[in-house]
Length: 216
Image (cartoon, rainbow, N blue to C red; front, side, top):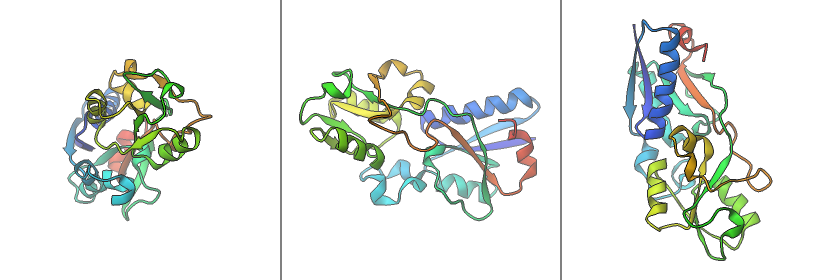
């Protein structure tokens, strides 16, 4: 039997989809589990912040349409990218155990937020991160930062930013833990709801698919 997993094409998204694939195959080696990578609108529209162009749902619409069109049997998402409501005929079937939920300061120059001088440029497009940074560090210049994890790191390394904020879980999953300058304490930055967890979306009541993923 073939089981098709819809996923974004970024390196982190593919890591997460492959992680789900390997977990399924460990229990059901007889399955043919295939990835269906695709580009989402959120991956393509990098010129503006997410809040200006439609929010987190831009990262999942194409994957959800693949489910509705029966081009995929399940979709793997970062939980923090999911909206609170799901389209008709789709449901969130599995939430994996949460990985590290924290945010990280990544910088080639500074080891923590306190060291950043007045006017230092720090990159993030997250409203949550921006608001908390502005509250505790109003002296910093916050500049929008879009793109996948590798793109964001490249922009930092090219000197466009003095520091950037990324999720600890994503860095760890890609073997980039050494890029973390500081795990930001919760007293300064509370993580997003479900940050660090993976969500698996399926068609509602699709028992054929659910039997393969319920152990996740």
